[in-house]
Image 1 (cartoon, rainbow, N blue to C red):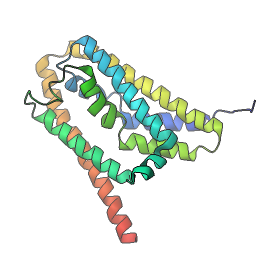
Image 2 (image 1 turned 45 degrees about the vertical axis):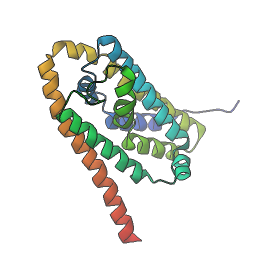
Image 3 (image 1 turned 180 degrees about the horizontal axis):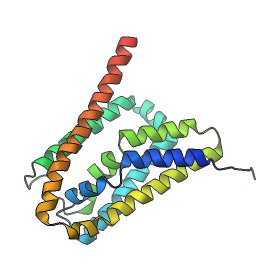
Image 4 (image 1 turned 120 degrees about the vertical axis):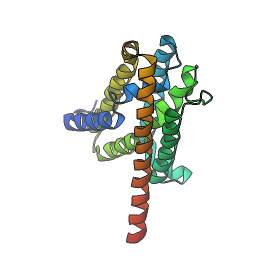
Length: 210
């Protein structure tokens, strides 16, 4: 059996990078806002399902991200634009809850857990790109396993943040959660604009260089 040495540097670098991008603390109020019409049981199920969805997406792109993008003929920037547009829509709905949107009235945990929680909020373009780069930089089996292990730990931290968000919800009044959701709607929309701007900047720079 070959000697496999885990890479502590790759583990810590990947863990910190992915946690910063996924922002488990910052996503707690967003999670509460998107699941404010769910009961505690449905909210816990949403946390589990969102983590599983994010994990599937992240590991899928970790193991074959570039091949997937090449297969469907899109660039990472195009994926980033799609994620940005979706976040703009989410931000608008958080700012203007009408009571008829699938995002704001979802009573089934799967609705918001799949989109937007699982992706693009957790497994978004930033997390996907960081994962692909970490795997590309892993030069042996030990480093690759270290990167994958870091992803598992990061997803566990993200899950715990959402799982215990219910505790926070009991400390806040519905009006406070509604206020937070509107403020976060602006921030989510700003993140979407930032993703769009970064992708357009890359396209312009590549076009000028070409």
